[in-house]
Length: 307
Picture: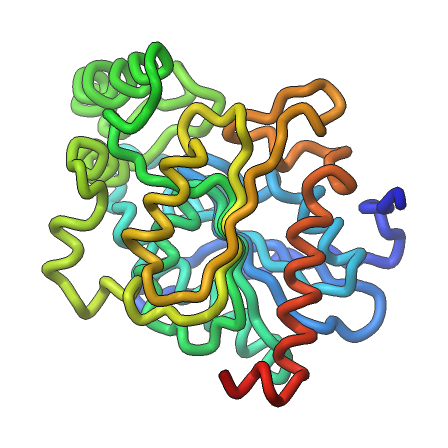
């Protein structure tokens, strides 16, 4: 079955999301034809603009879901004119931006279930959101530990160069991390990069310091069902790393794990970012929408919902 992601009746609405500490985030809401059966929030990866997820969001909207994408503070449409000296951290993204977006989505759709799709870092830091009780389910796309020694060689040399050589030299000079010079992503606030570097040096990854702050470390409290996806040609979110992260962080949530094959992509390549390329609806995206549909069916079944 071929899926049509360019549904002509899909409405794209740019929105503004206010955070509790006074920042304004830019988002886009994709509304399906007719009343949505559920709402989905997409938490994106580091340096990835919300527009990167547009085709995936359109696909989910064509399946009857209302979908919210947004830019974290200091990035994309949520970036000030200059990010030189702009204060933002990964922890801010997880404890303030993700909850603010989810509160906004809950106000917009108070009566239907709410899901999150977290890609890469966006899935890693979802466990920092304090308002997770309203979460009906969480789909993790290529989410894994970022400890640098967990990456296979020789790929490991690439993040080591960026994180431990390039950023420490250039960030003090620029007042921000000029990631666009060496990656396909956008430039980042310096605080985001310094915290990212700190996390990647720890064998427990983001856990050591954050576990000392139980008011923001909500991973053990998340009990909504999770479905994690990895692909066999991703050098970062390898199947082993993905399973480890799921086990070590979202330890109390009922979880499913799916390993995708890059060979199922038209060109046989996916990698860490390729999942969201236009044209992968049948090979990959339908697996997420099918899981969302199954989860909705479970919620409507009183016996399952009571478990």
